[in-house]
Amino acid sequence: MRDTFADTPTAGFDRRSFLRIVGALGAATAITAGLSACGSDADGGGAAGGTREIEATLAFTLSGGFDPMNASSAVATAVNQHIFEALIDLDPVTREPYLALAAAQPKASADGLTWTVALREGAVFSDGSPVTAEDVAWSFTRALDPANKALMAGFISFIDRVKAKDAKTVEFELKAPFSLFAQRIAVIKIVPKAKTGDAAAAKAFDTAPIGSGPFTLTSADATSGVVMAANPAYKGSRPAKADKITLHTSPDNTARLNDLRSGQAQAIEAVPYLDAGTLGDEFKVDEKQAFNQLFLMFNCSAAPFDDKRVRQALHYAIDTDKVIATALQGYGVAATSYLDESNPGYQKAATSYGHDPEKAKALLAEAGVPNLSFELVTTDTGFVKDSAPVIIDAWKQIGVTATLNTNPSSAVYGTLVPSDDFRVLAASGDPSVFGPDADLLLRWFYYGETWPVARARWTDAGAKKCADLLDEAAESTDQKQKDTWKKALDVIAEEVPLYPVFHTKVITASDPDGLTGFQGASTTGLYFLDVARKG
Image (cartoon, rainbow, N blue to C red; front, side):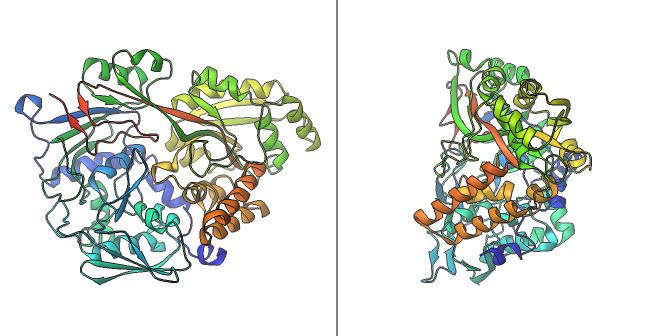
């Protein structure tokens, strides 16, 4: 199935589309203006006025817009789960699929190449306009259009075309059978064609989105955060249980803790690892193993990192248990595969990078690389910053010198990684916010243009073999599919163009006296579907 994916221009996450998303702080200012222009007064009064308001604090600031075919920032993806719907949605906490805009489960033809989905009755967008099959077909078609460079295109490149059979029925034609169809279509949130039909409309929509979900976006700002209000037009299965949700944003650990302890927030994400053990006496603490990881990524086209033995050596040199104990206070697990061990698709990779400095030295000697020295670029994510010095010290023990260059993600991916001088990156990544299945997670980093080509510069025979295996697995089912994914996982573990050092645990804290029905997720973000404010 290689040709049916790879020959599709939208089959991967190209660099231009991704860079358009990350670091776009200027867009956040436009978002506030765009929402103000809508004239919404749904943000209402405070608790004193009787509004059932939930307040929470996220660990990331808003960057970029909300158009769901391209939104990838931590804040935007969390917000979009509240304001948009897909045909089938994945619960952000349990990760189980449920009917959203679909009236029933998708139906497949005998050959698996045609799927039909009926829409639920009475579905409308928050502006009152009905959700039609034409809107659904348009939402998929615009994401697949190469001209739009949509970030979500790589997840649905198995789709050939989508059309409205009638006002309430959508038909999908596939390039080849795809067993994960029903849950994969969750990545495409449905938008009104009337509001996104051309470039100018889509630009305005990015800052003032309109969805069919249980909440609407009232205001959004890179500094003050996001406000959502209950959508009175919503008629689905998960109506809002709060009138208003205010999401404060702060990367500062102390500030988030202060928000929780002062009552300013009823929930916070990314509880500092040092404080996780003490918060449980007063608050509900959710600790969940996550796919989120610290990974090393190499410029695989630049010597000496074009030799996989050098890449392997740097992994063998790391005392991962020491890094986890030092930087995460034990809240992490050493990677034994690209997938974390809690993932249903987990299979241990054939190559496992235990702490073996002697093997690391031997690999460098075999590669003919003495006195290796380079700059280690890192993002400013808390656990990445805390891990980097421990990793650099481990490399020092095998005679490798690395200097540290830490920057915000916008600078890392916008300037440093694209540079000809780039060699090694340590950063975090969590595409599981879009879905937990192995195909989706593997395609994010190892298929298409953005990560393997534009960033890791991984374009050799190993890269092609991995892509071919992912295409083969996509057409397979059951044990054959699992076996093929195992082959891909083994290739990635051996080649290590981009590979996790450890998978983190995600820790969320909430006030049990302030919220009912709240659970922390195993991904970034806080989610308030079916959650109410007490009191």
